[in-house]
Image (cartoon, rainbow, N blue to C red; front, top):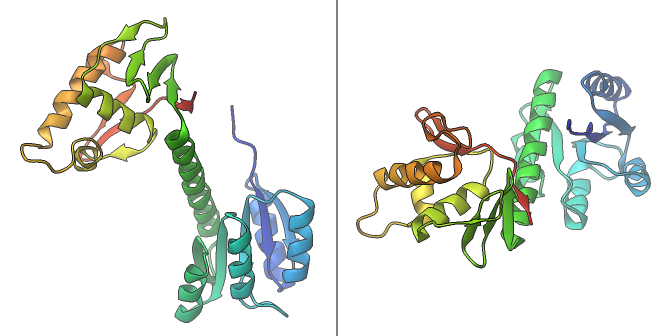
Length: 240
């Protein structure tokens, strides 16, 4: 199922710039609402759901840096700051106030769209990771990994025997689906830097897990090998 279009709030006092940003984002499947200052921004956010705010630094009345600080104190809505080219102080202050990213004017609207996508993906990943950490069990493609009982059950509900090391590695994958994980990071997540631990042990464990969960371990689709990268767990994982 396709994701719904994001609701973007553009806070920019220059009418032409505001209209250009809004038009470009709308033609690229975003729902856009605009505001020319902090007062309009607050009215919009009181009336509707906003997924991301594009906030200009130079605004009449209360400036964007102050608005960014207040917004971050109240919510985790992603914020992209627009700054004048060369104004490194504004960029640094914006990030310190809690902005997720910044873009210097003038900018290519394609870059703005790319940054919006990246920020929203990071937020979604963070929310997913938070939900995973609070779950007692996770499911993927009918499989169930019970984090409290440290059990793995197949889609038929039968218990599948796994070693402690295999369970820890599968859990690391399930809590970070869709991310390329290096052997080094997987080693840190599962075995730490204890004496005798080495990256090759990750390959051995992956091979063992594949034999237990993949329909064809030689043509793995759940745990994919990423050339010069490591591994990626491809199924959609949900807390249970």
